[in-house]
Amino acid sequence: MIETGRQARTLKKIGRGEMDLRVIAFSSGKGGVGKTNLATNLSYLLCRKGKRVLIFDADVGLANIHILLGLSPKLNLQHVLSGEKSIDEIIVEGPGGIHILPGGEGVEALTHLGHEARLILLEEFERLSESYDYLIFDTAAGISSNVTFFCTAAQEAFLIASPEPTSLTDVYALMKVLCQNHNKKSFRLLVNSVKSENEAKQVFRTLSSVADKFLPEASIEYAGHVVTDPCVSKSVRRQRPFVELYPYAKASGCVRDLCEKIMEESAARVDSSSRRPFLWRDVFQVQ
Ligand SMILES: Nc1ncnc2c1ncn2[C@@H]1O[C@H](COP(=O)(O)OP(=O)(O)OP(=O)(O)O)[C@@H](O)[C@H]1O
Ligand SMILES: [Mg+2]
Image (cartoon, rainbow, N blue to C red; front, side, top):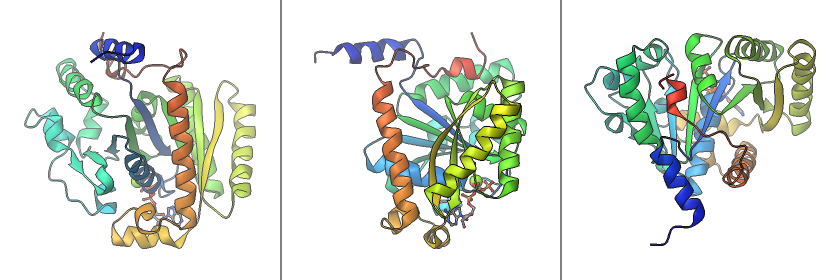
């Protein structure tokens, strides 16, 4: 087979441990604002478009992607860290072909790994990453070290907020910690549970004006909105993605718009020289 220039470049990068992989964290300051629902429904649609998606269930105590998707994984990252299993053995497949990596208690350990454990995980994750187009971290809420670990590791931090004032103050607190303590400067805001796009844009303007004033080194971009829709909780109860059960619901339309936007960006970034390749070596600080 004749390799095109781009294929050859990609193969060369993968050989050096650089992946042609887009890594996105879904985080929030306040809990229960919709991170897991939006991450899983977006992943489902990306899979339906032929993309290979792995969601890392990175919520330590309250991991619940599997509940949302009606799965019951028996193993998690802790079994990889203890050397009992390889990473491929703990991944489970969900609706539409989404792959899920259950973090479990292993998530807590990630932030204080010894050198040996970092090398083992580095090798496992590098090999794994070759099989995916998107890796999505569904994190816990708040500003704990495992939340900041995943937001810092990801190329893009999607912050999820609702129009409630507490959600906005908490998302600002997360931005501030990431910016001042972890040198993370750029963020994207996804506003969930709104009446309309206008309301979402108003939420965005409020946050960005506070950030401009008190956190001038940070940049925040509007990523999209999802409306409040009873189909979301109906599908949670049926343990299936709402985009699958209710494709014509308003919330499904919003996630479809987000999916299209993300795929267009992915197409544009393939040849972009400014694109920062994703390196697990950087995440685990291994030279
Ligand atoms: N757009 C929406 N319309 C209606 N209900 C919604 C919407 N988004 C989320 N919800 C409701 O909010 C609940 C919490 O959502 P989800 O579990 O995705 O939040 P989370 O941010 O992942 O929570 P946690 O911080 O506990 O991880 C859902 O079970 C659902 O009932
Ligand atoms: Mg969640």
